[in-house]
Amino acid sequence: MKGIKLYVLATGVLPQDKSILIAGLTQATEKNRNPVPVWSRTPTYAVLIEHPDGYVLFDTSVNPEGMTKRFPQSLKTMNNYEAADDEQFPARLAQLKVKPEQIKYIVMSHMHFDHAGNLELFTNAEITVHEDEFAQAYKAFGLNSEMGVYVWEDLHQAAMKKLNWKLLPAGVEKKVLLPGLTIYNFGSGHSYGMLGLLVELESAGNILLVADAIYTSTNYGPPLKPPGIIYDSIGWARTAEKIREIATEKNAQVWFGHDEDQLKTLKKSTEGYYE
Image (cartoon, rainbow, N blue to C red):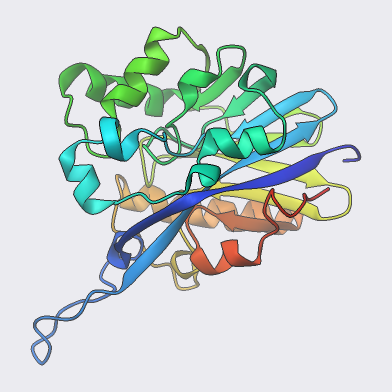
């Protein structure tokens, strides 16, 4: 669609064992009982869309206070988040001279720490999230402050700000957010309820943002290779095939959630935009 601009907000890395992304990557054998882990500097990013009807965000990345104040020790140990001051999510918006209050819509792929860390900033936005994901995230919030990939303080701050949540029912397959922007319900897999966003651009073509529904091109295959963090393995495989069908039907590029090689090829917000 004419008039849409898409910005890739690169927001630092998660140094981690790559088997988090690809299960069994360094599987031990009888001849090699102690395989050396493959280390990854797993990238994080969010997407800002400038639409004729207002600014839209796909995810909100990691909170700048994650490593210093917010993350439980278990999460710090597994994901030692690194980002320079000018790579932090709020800085990326400021570089484009976009203020949080200008964001009209947010589509949350899911609510893990590296995707939902800055929701509290967006008190004017309509925030769409899968109803099952929302319910399970806040169930964890109510029961336990040491929540792993859901960060208690992220959810606490979001709740305190009384944000404008719009829950996508589990039975709704897709929803047109704005002309040229369609939300897809991927269901359970990596997490309890995953959403994707199809962006139809005039020059760059169609882009299907899938976030952690599929971590990397290696997971996508074929053959499919499941991730190390997964809630519903059967649902994950079903989602992968659904994504393949949508990408074929819409002639869309698939942008994965944490693909180091793919992100290197993408134009970052400091370099320009897609339209």
